[in-house]
Length: 87
Image (tube, rainbow, N blue to C red; front, top):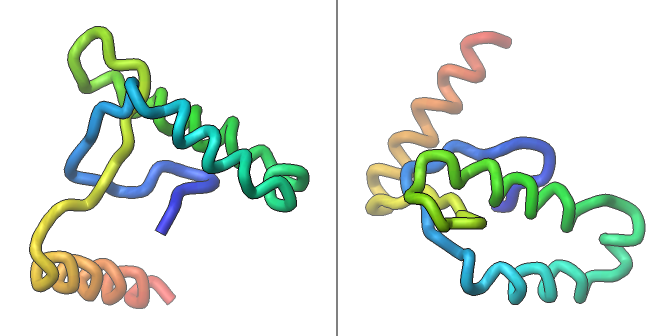
């Protein structure tokens, strides 16, 4: 799962300030994709937007959903049921 058009829900932020250049290089490796869309700018923008709740000096943060598989699946099912209730 990756973020393209919006920030996904997360409960854990990791400081990637020291490794963000590696992420950018990995994104740039997919030239056929980046030629059609602004994936790098979007991904970097989301990473920068996540820093506001972290300590000063963090330039980029990656978001994750951390938990055991049972909790993650239960949360997914609850969110799916809520979504389907609006259809």
